Image 1 (cartoon, rainbow, N blue to C red):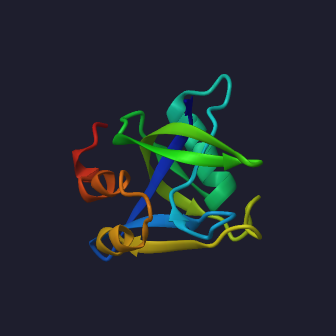
Image 2 (cartoon, helix red, strand yellow):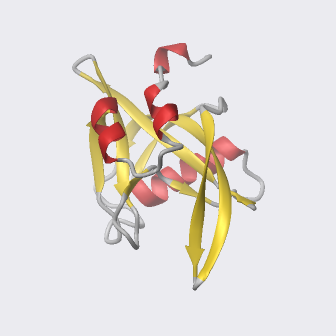
Image 3 (cartoon, one colour):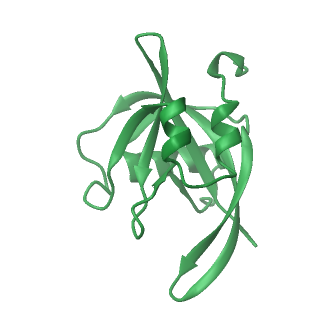
Length: 137
């Protein structure tokens, strides 16, 4: 079992909460930005770096873990079980160009739409229960 970190990127538009989904590289499923922890960074800082690399967004990432989901990462013919804590990131800047732009799509959606699009059943309760106004700080 390995640990990755994820960012639930969000913003408010016309009083509606929106979250950012990105496409996975291989299967083109809708997911949240996630990746391996970075040495010397907190889990939330690592999640923020993943959001920049995979989705081209920056903002304020909270150290509050919204929940944890698990999945099987497929690495070179090998299945690797992973657990993933999710950290909220309020998006303040959206880049037109970013490192993985040519490998992924990004899409802003309502929580309701995200619940329909996201493939991971364990991520749905995290989305369903997300309330940015309840975050500390």
